[in-house]
Amino acid sequence: MAIESIGRVASSDSAATQNSVGIDDFLEIFLTQLNFQDPLEPVDNREFIAQLAQFSSLQIASETNDNLEGLLEVNSVDQAVGLIGRSVTFNGGLSGRVIAMRLQGEDLVLDIDDGSGVQRGISPVNVTLVQ
Image (cartoon, rainbow, N blue to C red; front, side, top):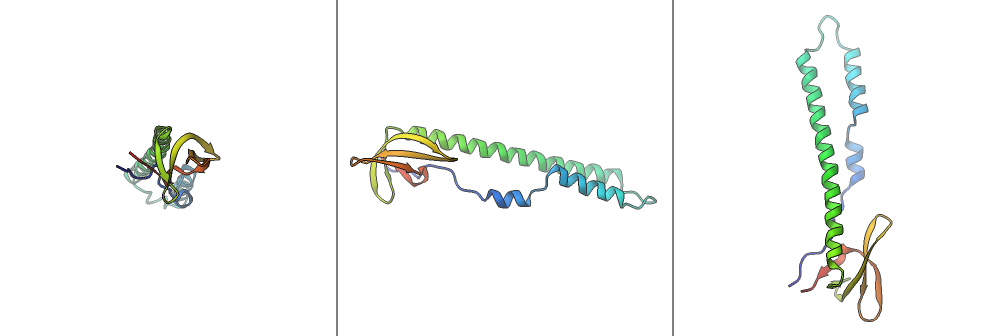
């Protein structure tokens, strides 16, 4: 029985970073709004509180997302550790036994003994466990 490939799903962190509004951006917008409001008709306090609450919710959601990404990385490493000593298929049908796991830069890679030598630097995403 074979299982799905092991590893994290790649995400476009650069797009998410470009589209996010940080605390500095929010404060700049907030202060600009205060500077340009009509002194005779100031913005209602409830609107300001609502804006602050919305930003607080966005900040909490962003922190939660960061925590989930960390958990995904830990889970990916845990799955890769579980492959050590197990038989796998990789690179379109080659098979072998995982003998080591290591980090290469920021990427997790496996070393696999396929009987004819050790294949180094195989991404866990390209590996399927063989039962």
